[in-house]
Amino acid sequence: MALANNEWLRSSRIYKRIVSVRLPLGAAAVALGASWIFGAISAPPAIAAFILIAAAILLGGEHATDVPLNAVTSDGRAPGERIPLIETVLSGLPQPVIALDVQGEVVAANAPARAVAPALRHGEPVSLALRVPEVLDAIRRAIASDVPQRVEFFERVPLERWHEAIVVPVALRAQALQPATRLILLTLDDLTPLRRVEEMRADFVANASHELRTPLAALSGFIETLQGQARDDPAARTRFLSIMQAQATRMARLIDDLLSLSRIELNAHLRPSTRVELRNIIRQVVDGLQTLARDREVEVRVATSSDQVEVLGDRDELLRVFENLIENALKYAASGKRVDIALSADSSRNEARVAVRDHGPGIAPEHLPRLTERFYRVDVADSRAQGGTGLGLALVKHILNRHGGRLTIESVYGEGATFTAVLPLAAARAKGN
Ligand code: ADP
Image (cartoon, rainbow, N blue to C red):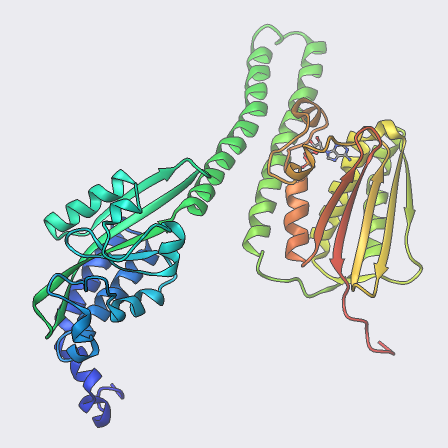
């Protein structure tokens, strides 16, 4: 309201120009908005196409003199010359955009487009530089029908990548161009990251369902047996009930880990702000795992500094980190008979480090980079036998990331492994606090 009442603004050329072209601008916005809503194109190309169309409409008409007269011909290009206006608009767009004339020849292209198709030349057919049949077909269809086209295509070499091409015909109205010139705007978008996320999500759901279905199938099997032939066998009943309890515990643990992961992801952008003392946390975790250590006949040695080591953290999440790391060492590396836990503070780097070193079988190098992936296990049967879910190290990584820290894993196969949690130190307390 305040803007519309402003006399100066109302009398300005750009305001009048916007008012005079509001219908084509609105139509372009509605067409692209509808294409976006119905999923025909994704948001970035839709916005890019709108900017281009708006620029073409606004800079056309009474701004015809903005277009150098000698720079354009009635077919929308200057033989051997560029259209500076279109070049300028394209250069401001982040994704690859190519402007073509109605013969499919290149009128202008921005730097990202040249990076994708280095053979693009002004005045040459785009088909010489972009040899993708799906895209060339879409360009032909857009020229013939004057209707925007969208195609997806897949590249195998040099790397597997998915792309999206949007082809939008636009009318360039300038006094120098009678009648109005048609341009074809080709926008390319890399869909690979989006596709990878979709694949990861699908894999995750498939893995989670599979992991839940296994204990559920065991439970159903034992229920049937107990209802049938084992109904009157007290010894079998006792044995089966204890297996069923273990399977139910495993399911509960899996659900717990899945919920924790999604909660941590939800809060990934929020840095914890409570001061937490790490010596305390490690002592609490080691105390809680004494029974497991005794069962596995593993000696746990803890070396901490005499000073307090404080970080900004979520106490429960940090307990989870050290529980996972120490429990893994006790489960998978019990053969080493000893687990060393070392807490240190490096004030020059402003880092607290907790290293959990075992002397077990170690981990082969090809597994190391994948250990923090959800459901990744070196030996699935071993992990299941230990009551593992395959989510422990994924949880550790996410929690440490949220705390601004990281996890490092070192191992020499056959000589044990060291998992180190690194966290930023909290600022020193003022004296007297
Ligand atoms: P799990 O629930 O299976 O324990 P984690 O994410 O905690 O899942 O660990 C992933 C895999 O990493 C384990 O299944 C195991 O194969 C391997 N692993 C973890 N810690 C150790 C260790 N200290 N020594 C050897 N292998 C380990």
